[in-house]
Length: 77
Image (cartoon, rainbow, N blue to C red):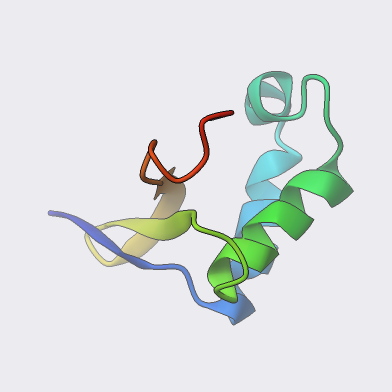
């Protein structure tokens, strides 16, 4: 079963590790940096941003993350 739940601050290390994988880095770090992306996710997890970050679990094991936001919050998005 696949489950989604809010990403906890102490799970940011998982996302950082995933972001360094070559197949992920090509997509998520193009035009950015690991530091910048992790900081954006940290801000969201701590409620400093309007983005909601979710941990994706399969059979109870973390396998990825996703995020959502209301498009009408920031017209730049």
